[in-house]
Image 1 (cartoon, rainbow, N blue to C red):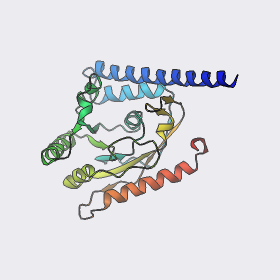
Image 2: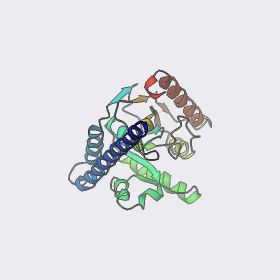
Image 3: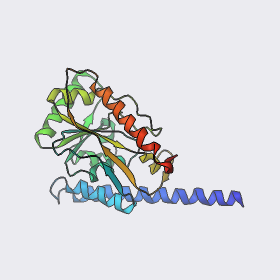
Image 4: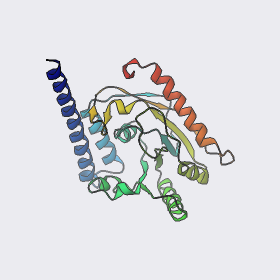
Length: 240
């Protein structure tokens, strides 16, 4: 009887995950199909809202979005992080993503159409290209948006932030705003094939202008984001 109940729970969990995958895939398809029909960035925003509403994920926003922010630094746990961020700001976001993603069939269109920024392996040529592309997106009024950890982590402990974000922010003296997403991997994880609807908390920390005279500002920002994450998570028993 116990084994039967456990098997039923596993099957039900997989069905919920597959439902979320279908919704996400449908939302991306919708974005591709409508990209040239709507003014920018409405196709992207509409797709993100479509996904969020159909997977029943409200977002509780804390802190104040800075209307003058030119770069967002966001911690990364789940594939739904991009959709969450797209729906809590009206800004036209230019995402920095690994170059390999731009070559993936179908998904490559999702990042190429809105002219997101491909991040290649670190080299002088790649860094020059990164700066040039970021300058172009900034000139078009877009906000550079980066997962500075460079990859997802589901442990709740943020990985060291990579230097690319600091280099771009320092180069153009950007106004940077960190955003902390709480336990998104508890709601959706491709790695563990799970999906749970429920409210996600997103926290805007205070913005600041990048100061290249302070070589530690990126590490200090990571520490502030981690402290905020730990503090908020400690008061959320549903994630313990």
